[in-house]
Amino acid sequence: MNVVVELLGYIAITAGFLALTKKEMGAFRLWHLISSFFYIIYGVFLESMPLIIASIVFCIIHVYHLKKLKKERVNSTQKS
Image 1: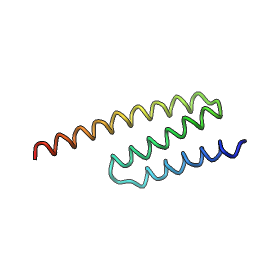
Image 2 (image 1 turned 30 degrees about the horizontal axis):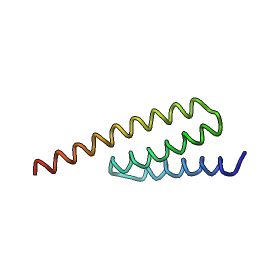
Image 3 (image 1 turned 45 degrees about the vertical axis):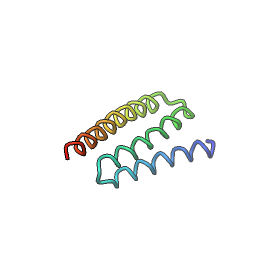
């Protein structure tokens, strides 16, 4: 397998592990979003539709929740 493709896989794994070390939900979601993005690229190179589809779904979920967290933070600062 191409070294670049394997490197993408290792970057995705590393970002996923970094996500697990985060206690704050926003940081967790951001790192898992980065991991999922690299898994999409990795899946394209591997021509693995299950990997691509799952990673896209994870990206959508994390973007949704990150926007929700941002909105909650804005609302809580406006109330103060």
